[in-house]
Length: 456
Image (tube, rainbow, N blue to C red; front, side):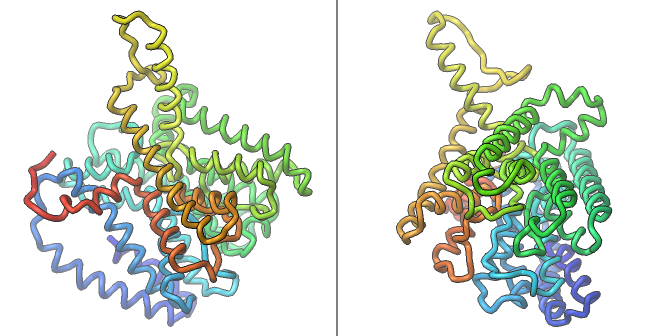
């Protein structure tokens, strides 16, 4: 799978005559094929444990970033910066330690956006396709990626539908963006970054270089990428009325509107109006990372409001990051449940529900545990930045941006950032993308040593 994905930027490099980059991708491609072809003859286990499924997905992201770091090294003198760029790409974050990208090879710019595109749900769909003959294994991969409520009974149909939605959304974004931009190549790269809520741009000042209409089109598709992809197929089946019953979509609309309104109240003091407020609000809430103004120019209240939105993120089953709005809704419902049970008679039975669905207590506590782990990761990372002398609020913004795979930056992420902090941000981006529990399972010795306990 990784060999096939890396063959695309190889073709782009050859097309543009950038043979140094093409040579690096050719080496990577040959190495991956040399590793993959012998391993493909091995017999896979008939069943797959949950920890094994988690390990598969985590290693795909980790190996994908490591092999791409060599290819991206054609545009950087330091391997760590190349790996940082690769991790930021495959996790759909968009943070960059490059001082400037406008002077980089076109194959390098394409590779970054391409990694963001397949690093979204595309890589999950491709993983599912590989396991189509093993339904249990495929469901394990699907479950740990938290792709939302399964709309169909078989993994094959599910994977096909998600791929169709993702592909159609990408084609629509490219078509609309190309109509409002003169350069088709630039439109392609921004479209790939938009639907994956990645945020990599070919310009140093992101969307501030574009006309308002083009910036609005891109941000609109980025926001659509933060909507649960299975919901699009549900709309096709049941009509637009399905939108009225989706609590996460309503929460996404409300959260975006509230953030945009708050930014509108505070931005005029900095010489900006409602277009910037709306686009920046959509970028933060969808965890895309596109920007029309410098985050460093914002006041503290605006930064704090954006931090809250980046933490919540988009919908489960979307390409967005954060701990997802569904978990925030579950937290509010848990609070409501505790208050109701405290006021109810001792023998009263009060069930937790979200809309028309009953929620098991186990699901509630699992969501709370992940949110606590998410906040602990942010706190420890933030502490490291503060210890290095960075302003507390800017440091918190940067860490949240990395952990929620957003990509907006206050300027801390830069070429001369301390190497330890670069590695720390890479860890945050990986943990935020694959969700922290999966990464902890991979790091747990019991995953690697001892006999298999049997399929779960």
